[in-house]
Length: 223
Image 1: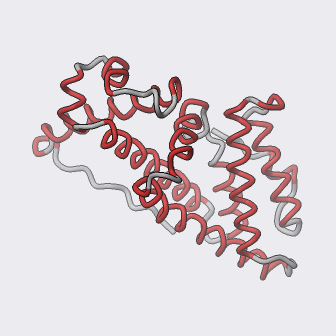
Image 2: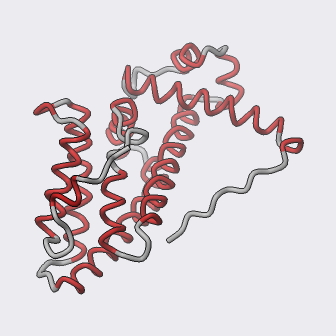
């Protein structure tokens, strides 16, 4: 599976659009900061404006309401994560074991796995149950990710003659990764990105012993 880079338009034709996109990105990044610092309910348009160093009128001009700003922020984070894991998948080539190792390691890259973004994700997760828009935004992408992991587990089961259900194995793997993210955010048990990744490696070794070794996986550097 390959991720096709977005083709850039000619500079002269997108100057105004680039300025708008840059301003919106400033506001989205400031929203992530506020979610991480204050949480969902305490984040206001004024907080975002102050955090971005812009006027409140600029925030209203680009997003009109807090809800639209939050939806745009969730969409941005979701797309960022999707591109990230797809790029990792592509680095694994056609080998399912290499694909899975690459995708799991990518979950602990600093660009994605940092307390600021983990806190923002948790803020959205806490609201998702009561907000169908949030569920629909992430639902299709989550399903796509899960289907890819199921396909990989199916291929590894076949080549390794393992006795597990690929759907259950994929679900357990995803839950384990999400749980490690939560522990990183909470700071429990002195968990770090390195120790969380080591735990993920041990899980892969325990489920797929014919495809992975602890030494080989832990030797992989996370960004």
